[in-house]
Image 1 (cartoon, rainbow, N blue to C red):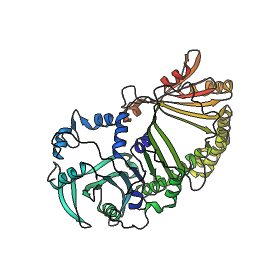
Image 2: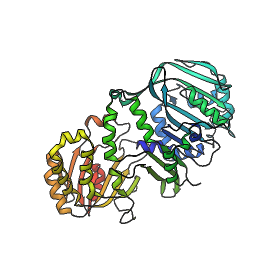
Image 3: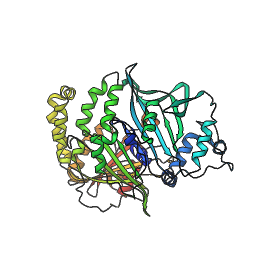
Image 4: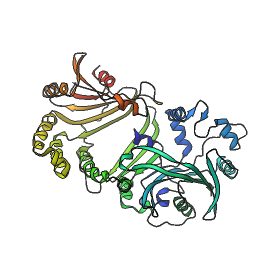
Length: 470
């Protein structure tokens, strides 16, 4: 879901400006759109804007600015108290590492660029920035940067973001200043001056050294995604750069030990790209295409995936409330071999498992030989998220239901699964909620129910498995 949320806001079609030409080749992610208005309209159509308003606004008041929408519009100079439609030009967000050479630390920086030309927003935002004098808790100063007036907004209390990995030294708490201006018709906001200067140089037509566009991995992943005029969204996450940054931020050294294990399990992914089309047809809200770049070849769990599916027909258990649907081929027969490889390539696992490795691999083989290659994932629910939350279902082709049922009968009760009969089918439910459910940003069913029926093994939210059995 996190990755969906990120890519829903990103597009790249044909634009005068692009962040891959303005940011360094160490950039972690770029998220761009060539038509901000179209993206916002699409977000409204799926309820995303309502969800954000409910999250960040108390009634009609924004919790961040403390003003209503009407007051905000009036401050921008719109006399009728209503904001005009968003600009229909380019907008982009970039995330990149920032090195503090004096202290010897690495942090994260961010930049936002939006084309306000040919819209009522250019003059309004420019006027608002020049009149900006004070915000409670912040100091505002006009500084010069490459012969441009920039508003430097400083906070006595730096921005602190909970990452959940503070024990490893991975905290985001260094953003104490924001630089913002309107120049050449573009709104530019950045967390530090060097990134902003790079944006200014690009707008001036200058070429920066070692841009992201020249990064071989970026070029490779971009070539995997065939961006067309029909595409509304495009974004890239450079995982190799992200991993390097996190390792430098990690003062405990844990990332150095964990990274090889994760790579051997999932696969050594260097970059991910995605395009999206909003409302491509009457029965689709969004069509998404993924690209994954693995410079050292396919390995790990991703190495077992392919698009060699038996049928492209959508099965009956994919209901009308479906949010996303994926159908891939997964070579379960190679899971025992992959498990043995992962253990052998990770000394920590080898020491822990030792002579148990062959026995565990044999147990995995017993389950794997009952499964076919078709694997489907379905998520259901509604936006904005309500009390019913988001539910999910995994369906795996089963070629030997009798053997798999016997294995489940022996294993699941020992794991605390509760057996139950539903419409004549044996189901097993594991409660994965508890304290974890309180940490979720939206309502989510964390129980897991398993059942076999109709040549499928179903795993997922209890309500989804029951519906599939119906």
